[in-house]
Length: 587
Image 1 (cartoon, helix red, strand yellow):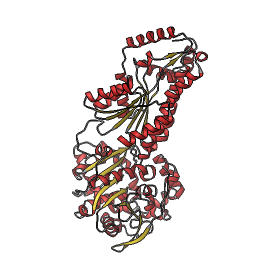
Image 2 (cartoon, rainbow, N blue to C red):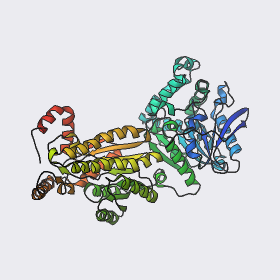
Image 3 (cartoon, one colour):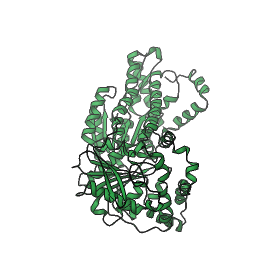
Image 4 (cartoon, helix red, strand yellow):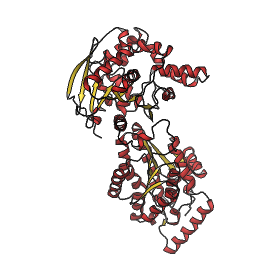
């Protein structure tokens, strides 16, 4: 997605008490309003990468909170109390959307301020929805602390306290200006935030008054943390609340939100693998999640991604997930389709043999699941692109992509025709690349994370004679997955490399043996198929490992015992591995 910054279509000053608030508007004023609230040490530029993704659908409004940016500055700590910020929020909402309630998207202290507002009695009439990012309600946090400690469950509060140690520095008058002055330099802060959030420093957008905001804004810590944590109030809201929880947030730990439904009964919760400053690192995710939530609470149909985020609704483990599987007509692909379907997922499966794909879909349906069958040759880049477009249009963007399709090939390198070698690479490697390029791109653009499972092999790290084409293709899948995992980390998409080992599927019976007669090829196919059958390790066991890899976010998954052994053997003693490879031939 092209990153761009929009200039505001309108600017105004909104008066709230004795404070003038600088307000910036984007998009169609007649559309529903999404009001953006920044935290410390930011101003409205925090949202520069999010605004263009929302402005084509909403009236988007951002403002500099009091003491920040172009809004009125103050050196009185009392002016930074949350009730004042909440009053400002309502003043801006009344000015920019007087006739309709607004949707809130808020981050960090902006989210803390928004929590203060949505718990006010007038919030139900003025706030249609609230998407909270990395900023809790301090009263809720204080009550959670007390409840946990009273029951002797100190670990959660301890980890949050450890993550919040920096706040004691911020609350000490005068000290931050001395200790943190180097960090307040714009380029230093950009590098720091980029490192903490696995994003480029240039994605960290700061306003012209950043250094002033950095130090002046710290008064919000002194004005609120101790009073609210030591004397928490009972604060409830009927406003629909969506929590966006970053699992790698160094400031706000996910455990602190576990009691949120006590105070916000209409609650949705999305957890993603990201850091604290998601507006910089995950703008697509925030834009998509906010738009989905706003449309749903306004009466639109909730997409599956939002349905599975609803707290308190009973569901199977993968209910409201869309799983796309290539090579789903038999073997590991078929068993994986059945495994995910049993856990509630909707399945889209493809195979070069449409009848086989339909047979798998019928087996899923017989177990009460939903599956859709397609024919596609994964080696054909154009065909995969067309297939992906059709699937996304008909069923939506997948949550889990499993690149399973593959073929076998054996024979000495000089006996293997170039066309056969190329065909193995185009199916086993090209099929994975094509799937990731199309479905993976759609997942990344959607911004809600997901999982990609690429089927490699024990052969990826087991050099052996007679398998140059097959092993090369699977080793390439292994390294490709490593690279893709690094690239997609910032998108919240996990990449899982599955290496099955000796598993009995029909790939053995259809493996092409180069350099032998047709009769000898058939004999070898039958012999090895029988040996694999005697091994008695079926594809259903691989399917279960794939499910677990997704559930537990495992990167590298050797499946069978011999696959585990070879993986560690190759890492610990690669020279010995090569020694045996030169002297032992299995085909």
